[in-house]
Image (cartoon, rainbow, N blue to C red; front, top):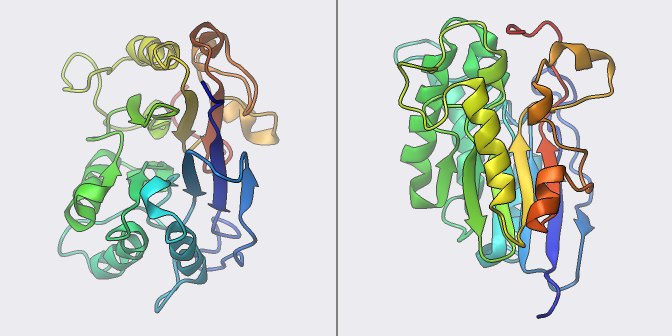
Length: 278
């Protein structure tokens, strides 16, 4: 069997120059390629994209251009904080139309291209960690699914923590986590009243390792908004169980070793300061 070749292409990792200045965008740099000249799949990653400029955000224009190079083999993952500053408000809110526009611009960059799109939530999508967070993330999910059609998905669904597994051909497995579920200090779906497949920390941890171990020879890319482990100053505010942690990108995890796959962890931001749950 010929060796599998996975092509990771970063379109824009952290679109906003800073969370405190939505709209202050970094100019899109050159795409970074890792892998082969003829990849089996192209993975485009973009995060913190929740305040795109009106009339044609340059980063989204560049993203669309990259998608159109090989749409049939391309998946785009939006890594959370998809609507600044506090997610999608309810119908009737005076900010609703503008927040829809911010989200729609991202969805429209992918839909009708022939590529697959995936949105995962971040803390800002959960009402910036506020009391309306669970409702806000479900409102955003409905909007993405309605506008994106069959080609754009929102995972995990319904405010559930995941993990949700998306297998892309025989060579790639995406594992989506909603890390804000762990950190949220208000209502969230949890045992025993939720309909989530995994709705307790123990169940999520077990399912996460099962997703890695069941990958076979696929490369595994775990996509989430916050890091499971961080060496930076805010690292103490992300209080993940040790059993949830995998090693940094490009290093094999114990679970991945058993499945003969390689595990990569892709995040949209560092751990937030002053997160809720411990």
